[in-house]
Image 1 (cartoon, rainbow, N blue to C red):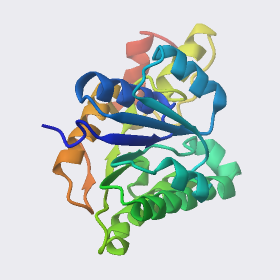
Image 2: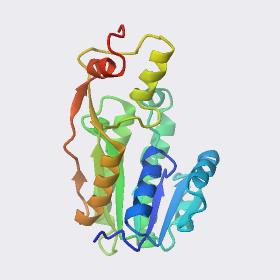
Image 3: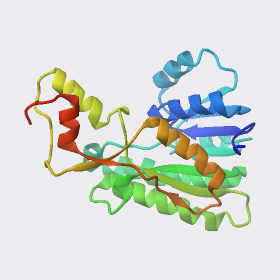
Length: 248
């Protein structure tokens, strides 16, 4: 039986692609007492609330992980946390580095501190393959966040809180990812922005990612960095799958 069954769960960035799928999976399969969605986008919360048709086990917190006080309020009575909130666009990070540091690094520190103070049992932070040997600012901020979560177990020594990280690749079809980008450009008959034909990407389905994170709560004891075995695909092969013969 999963530790998440009958528990109170909060997910930061809960209105994103992963958050919506994770909430649906938990509600359908793990019978939680309560699931709190914490995010800063009012419209996305409205749309997500509408899609769940007044599900009574759901709670909604409008807030930003940069705001420690708001996190403190949202975490009252919470048993388990999935930290999915982040700024994620690689090119945007290069032009707005301070904002990415505030959210991905300082915001993650706020989540760690608030979870420890609230006595949350277990916390899993979502990471990315770009955090492995990062060559861009986005990856560097996520690597820093990963290290904060692993080291956070040292600060939680006298508390019940355990913190771990799940690091995986690109979620197929997620909002803002390369698949919908390429599909839109193919429909518009535009040139595809392929940097190098040798480029590869690691891929995971949304369903696999959700199940992997949920299962990791049962296995973790604090300090782990979980990496699933997932396939890599050449970016040019992805183009051929989406539109055979499309010029590139």
